[in-house]
Length: 338
Image (cartoon, rainbow, N blue to C red):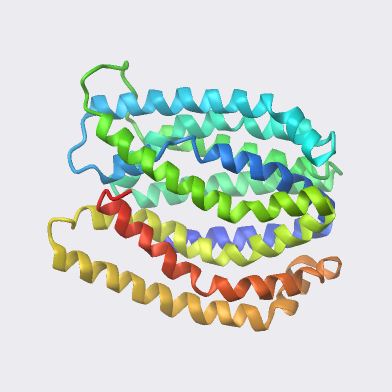
C-alpha cells in the first residue's frame, strides 16, 4: 500500500505541476467552492458502513447485501439533493458558473455508492495489491483526461472531468476484481448494530469536516475565487504528502488492529510500532517542507502562485501534529468505539 501510494504521489505531484501552469488560481478557486459542498455530502455516502464491514468479526453475506443497497440508495438520494442545491451554491457565492459544476460533480456519487461494500470486502480480505493496481490505474486515466482537457482550453472543466473519470474507472475496476455480487435485501440480518457503528462514525466525520472547511467557505464568500484558489492550493499541497502515508496506513491499520482486539498486548505493540514509524517519517519531512515552502511552491506551481508559500508555511506548523492525531482514529474504529 505504501509503495502504491508513492506511485500515486509522484503522479499527483507531476500532474499538479503541469496543471498549475495550464490553469489559473481562479479555476482552482471555482472548484474549491463547490468541493466544500461535495465533500460535505460525500461524508454521508457510506454512513461509515465500509468501516463497519472491515471491523465486524463475523460477517454474513446477507448483511453485506443489505449494506450495499443502503449505500446505493443513499448515494442516489445525495446526488439528487446536491444537484438540486446547485442554484443555491451559485447564489451564495454570486457566481452562476458554479451551478453546472455542482451538478456535474454530484453525478459522481452514483459510482462511489456502488463501490463502498466491494471496496470494503477487498480491504477485509487484505487484497491490497489488487486495490493498489485499481487505484493507480484510475488515477492515471483521470489525470490524463484532465491534462488533455486543460490543454484543449477547457479550464476548470478539466478538473471536473478528471474527478468523474477517476471515480468511474475505480468503480469498474473494483467490480471486476471483487466477484461478490449483492443479493436482494432481507430482514433479520442483524445490520442494526453496524448502522449504529457507522452512524457514530459519520457524526465524527461531519464534525471534522466542519472544522476543516469553514475557512474555505468564508474565504470564498468574502474574498472570491482567486484568493480561495491560492489558499486551497497551499492547503492541498501541504496535506498531499501526509495523505500518501495516512491513506494506506489507515486501511491496513484498522483491518489489522481489528483482528487483534482479543489480544491486548499484541494490539498495543502493533499500534506503537506503526505510530513510531509514522512519526519518524512525517515530522522531519514536515519540518523540511516548512523551511523550504517558498522553494516548493515556486517549483511545484510556478511564479504566479508565490503568495501561496507563506500560507503553506503557516499551515505546516499544525501539520507536524496531524499524523499523530490521525492514528487515534485507528484505535477508536478498531475497538468499535465510534
